[in-house]
Image (cartoon, helix red, strand yellow):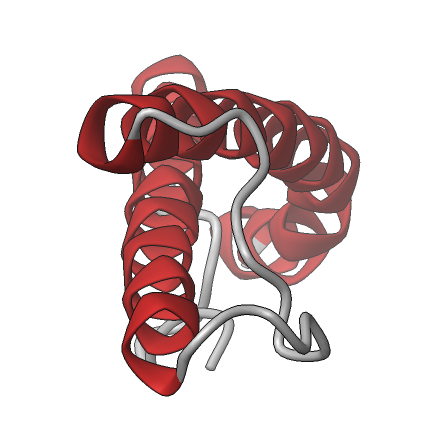
Length: 101
């Protein structure tokens, strides 16, 4: 019975850790994107969807690279946090149904 109560409260305890890891991973993904864009196009500023001077290909390439890097950083942070919680408590921090999405 105590283990069931522990499982019910653990996702709530995981939220602050998940938030901190998510924030840090977003910041690192932004830095990684700027560095990656500099390596790809040798420009400091990546195109924005509303940049009139940029073409579709360049805008979509930037969006794809940025999306991939942010998704990878989010997954890395989520998995790292969940594994840390599991190692320290012995319980996976989310229900058996799945994760965030």
